[in-house]
Length: 365
Image (spheres, one colour):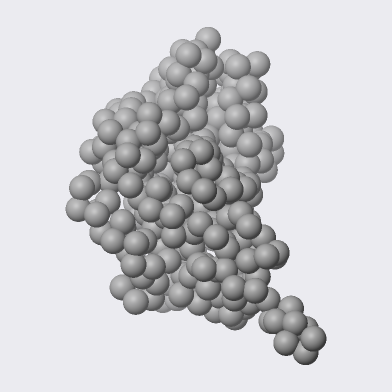
């Protein structure tokens, strides 16, 4: 009886926990969700293990759940459309989640999608920044609250339709990648903001802040941090609408409103190509080929993270990793490429397959 009570008390990823949950629990990115779901269904059909439970919580939300602790009440795997942050690794460590295995699964483009009933937008990253930033440089170079209400206000070559963009919430990896790749890319087109981003000289940073009208209270000894506060600030006046983590819902809303633009992963464009098309960005359409070769400017890698402490405690984790990293799944001709995943080069696929098979923690690399 004492032994039984003791084993119940220390449900921390030991074999005793297996009885409590006999399926893999996966949370995280809405972008990786469709790929993980396909792998989970294939895994459930072709092995002796139960089909994993996959939930779409967003990258940030998934990592928060993943890092909350070890034991069957916590997920085994979390999907992410960006790399785990240092702060998240620290949260994991604080809660006893060690030996995290990182698996990169491929690449994805972030698309600004529209209904096919609308004319395809031809944007630059500067246009995107001017449309969505909370503050933009005015005529005198100082930052002002964004006055642009239509795409034509942003750029005379664009249509005279109201800016209405449906996008992901702050917890989304897609949002993180979008502000880094698209918004920062646009902000850097302004010389003073570009200089601010690269400066580590306190005097220069303060002078640039004064020139841009940024209050002294926002000072940071790293100019990049001050720059990011500007570039990552999304307007809150109704032009940008947080549409949650359900990318399918965004697609439905675009169909209903041809003037709206939605921000989501390439796979959702690929799967709904009969209903929506993607805006051109800096002269490049969001195609499989452009993302694979790196010429489409708003693209990023996709990942999932595995709790090594749960391997052996929850059945099937090693086998799930083997399925996901197999050539038939994430290879060039794999079934995930049919769903819109952009495969990694051969050597990179081989390396992550090796790491997954050996259960190599990211700290050991």
